Length: 239
Image 1 (tube, rainbow, N blue to C red):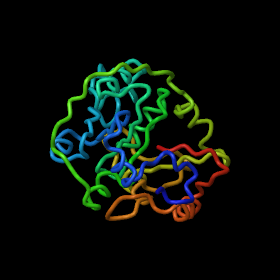
Image 2 (tube, rainbow, N blue to C red; image 1 turned 45 degrees about the vertical axis):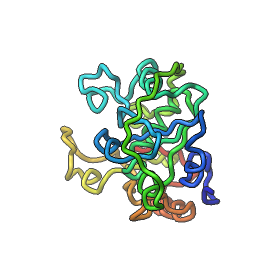
Image 3 (cartoon, one colour; image 1 turned 90 degrees about the vertical axis):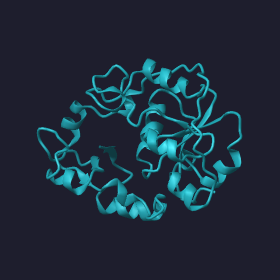
Image 4 (cartoon, one colour; image 1 turned 90 degrees about the horizontal axis):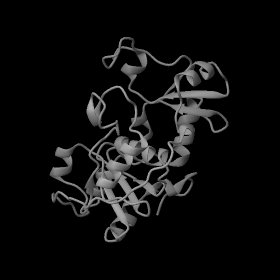
């Protein structure tokens, strides 16, 4: 059971639920880690996502890099279909990285009109800690037809939006990066390090329990966010 108190509990799948539904024919489990990690161990029946960032396949940097932030609808549909996912599938995504890449997958799916996707709460860490079965069989799903819609541009904040809203008391930009990136000490190879003016800083790892990286309780998260000025009555943009 998902812990009470979540505003949107349907966005998470718990490990006990997944263990009981692994054989459901409409369910597709997607491993969002790098290929070597998938090949080493994964949840039985899970398919490999092929990408952690969902860039356009023809991007100069390929699926993992380059200049485009996200694939277009056609490229997304092609990749999703290659995983055996149909429009009437139900999908649970996970990783062994604290949910970082599974959440990216979830967001990308919803951007292109596919809402029947959940993130596995605790991911592979929790699944492994509970002693649940694992596999090293590389699944090769048959391609499936998939039609993407959108994109939903309401799910993106663009440069003009940042310039307009970064000084607004009604809008908070939540910087989820590391301390070094926040201060500018770590530029990650960009020409200029630093942060959006007036942004609030809370590294995403601080929202997790350790060592098994489940989300902190709803009450603990609300208190943690409120300390940084990230509150429900404001419009929140993460970056």
